[in-house]
Length: 198
Image (cartoon, rainbow, N blue to C red; front, side, top):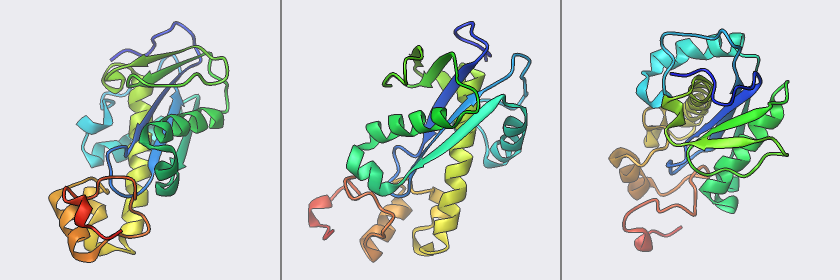
């Protein structure tokens, strides 16, 4: 995994978590890592166990030159659409950085320019560049924490386990109990959506 793409010292990596979920926010993060950063566990957050992500998060926060995390709640996801919500979240995370990046690398293939800072989109960037991987770990751990918190309100959906993703269990709970205030109303919550009274 590479540390840098652009050659600029203040290169920010950004990523999001929760795009494919039926409930809860999209959470984005941006991270600028120092030149000497390394951690043998760091990888795309989807490849890591929850325990390893939890171990990495404080290390990333302590050693990063700057990091930012932003939440786009389910209502804003519905208003913007999920792609725009992801990009908006990444922009807000970059805004929070205590140092202005000289270059931005983005996981995926879609982004809108932020201010006039040059950027590059990188498909599967979270498996190629450390700053994107670090951002993916922060986005995922902050989002998981939030889903575990709202699980207390609606335990029947088992968000502490499925985190709002469209698992069979989650969809069965929607069939049985209907939707909560945290569900995204513009998403196809069930395959037989037309029969669902929203």
